[in-house]
Image (tube, rainbow, N blue to C red):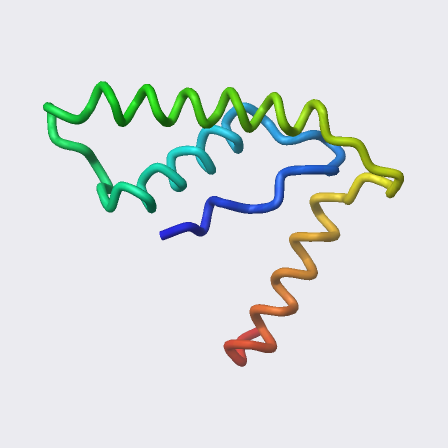
Length: 90
C-alpha cells in the first residue's frame, strides 16, 4: 500500500509536486485504512492529503545536507538490481 512513499529528499532534479502529492495520498490512505473515502469523509480526506503535501514540501525545502544530490536513474537501477536479487528475476 505504501509503494509511493519513497525518499524524496536530496535528489537531482528535486521531488515534483506530483511525487509529493502521491506520497501524501499513500500516507493518508495508510493511516485511515481508506483507499477511497466515503462521501461523508471525502472533504476531510482531501484536506488532510493537501496539508500533508504542503508540510512535506516545506520540510523538503528546509532540510540541508552536505552530500551530493542523488541521481534518479542511478537509484532506480539500484532498486531494479535489488529487486532482481530478491525475487530472482532479470
